[in-house]
Amino acid sequence: MDARERALSEIRAILARRPPAREALAAACRSLQALPRHTGVYLYVLRDGVLELAAHAGRDTEHVRIPVGTGICGLSARTRQTVVVDDVRNDPRYLACNSETRSEIVVPIMRCDRTLAQIDVDSDFEAAFDQADRAFLEAVAPLLEPLFP
Image 1 (cartoon, rainbow, N blue to C red):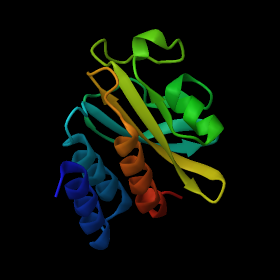
Image 2: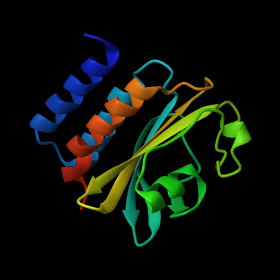
Image 3: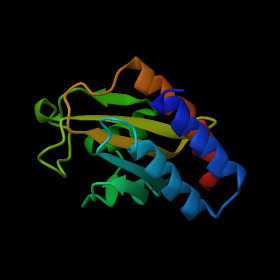
């Protein structure tokens, strides 16, 4: 079993225990942050046009509220699409929260056609996220969907 499969199994086991949403989100962040090259994992909930930090693991962030359309997270919320940035230093949309971050992936958590929340993962490595990482996080997103209002 590789690291992604282990993390997916952990998240499924966490959710099967039906802990309170806040506890489940924090545990899911820890499982995702344990993967290689993941230096920060952030779960944002969308409320009234603003992404609000609901849980995180790894590096802290000063971005606890992000308006839709602002930064990579705001872009993903607006377009309802996964966004991968191989080198954040070359993307003017990036909201810098750490000078060591080099790449980012943001995956929306959807219900029907509505964005509820998102998974945001940072890495200190350029081009850290490949198609397998994208597919993995896009498989995690619907597991977390019931935890959001």
